[in-house]
Length: 426
Ligand code: DSN
Image (cartoon, rainbow, N blue to C red; front, side, top):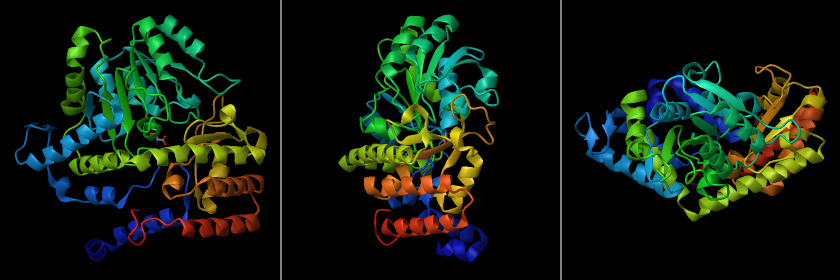
């Protein structure tokens, strides 16, 4: 960063410090990952200089011949990875992808049936404080109190009663596999569209180790920076299947494209789209499937270690990349545990658990994920060590000697799995 360090040392320092924080800590926030140098390089290019409103071949500005090449590669790779017939690679974020999907399928005030935020859903799935809760009439399903899992009989009962125009599946804190085909059956029964937001599990879906929403949903949205391990941004995918009403089938791709631009966004971030294309080429390599399998293996070992250490997990374990610890029996609050783990450089986030009796700003849960540690090359043995460190901190929350000991163990571990050093891919 020689130019930046000379011109703006304050920002250069902040960036350097953040890189060092990422190097020296254990990143266990389930929605985060570590991108390759190739992805970083694509993002840090003069493609940011270009205005490209419109789509490849149909731009509102001249000089887009090379941008078109890059965006078309991103589109083709997204379609290939997910088996989609249409892909829009322009959404700046998951929320904007969701907003565009709603725009394409719904009218304001239409009814959506979505997963409750407090049970693992997402803000943009109809939370009252979010645009989705303000513009649409949203009703919710959740997880069963006994099992911590989505109860499909319950979803069906609500759908039959409420008759939503759209059923939305997908979550940001749900540790179990989602049965997209079962959602499809319910959507067909009530004549609703089916949409999946697979932001968290996109990598698992791409690697075909999770049930696949693309063949059964009308629209699928995802961010690109979680398990998919790309730059910050999003995609909208659709199969444009035969079950769509004829008028909708004809127009779905067009409706999605015009909902993104000019409906929601102006100029696309073409440097980010180029980086999405690079990340998707990485996702098309055979070792990406191994990576995704390892994420899940790691999460399972981590869950077993936490359970063996006496911690309670929502739903009793995990099928995917994330784990939700229920702290209720420990007498500790989520914020306190997030802070204590942060002190030893284990980064997690406090999270609501289903039927939480505490407030969202200081809930009863801790959400953990394995995508970033797996990218660093950590496997089952390291997950066991990390799980034991977490248990030690939770059980000795105020013990400074234990914190010192765990911080040293973290430092020792990360030096064996370096990132952004030397000439490695990372
Ligand atoms: N904020 C993301 C997460 O952490 O799950 C979802 O958008």
